[in-house]
Image 1 (cartoon, rainbow, N blue to C red):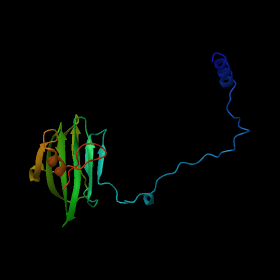
Image 2: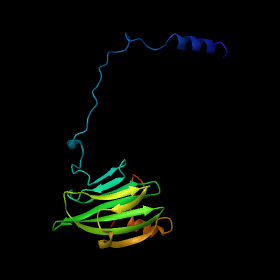
Image 3: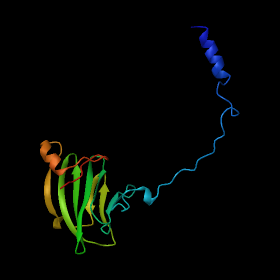
Image 4: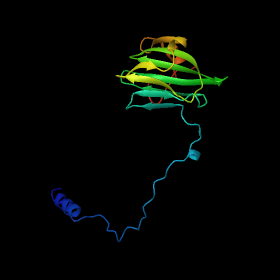
Length: 166
């Protein structure tokens, strides 16, 4: 065993890697860029999160149904577009902080100006839409609700956090 160690060190030090003459010539491959046709869904996302500014936006002109969750430090914000008719968009807004959540169902005019939710210190603080005009669908606590209640209102989400479901 002691004799094989110096031999191994000598092999590694002398470079026991095949030389370029032995290896076949390779050409660099250009990176592949994704195109719209690569995606089965060509509809853009209605949601965006500018983390620097702390603003989540919802483009009311993009057709439903879409849903997403934006994880925050101590909670999350769930958005789900439900329907668009007669020039209005109906969507669900679900702020959740440390397990406590409220599901709002809101109907707003479709506009070229996106709806916004300001997020300060990882908490939803202001919305560009009037929450008092939204209907409260359900409220509770993810940590205290029985599993059947949580499963009824929330679907699993790959990003983490709740996503309101029907």
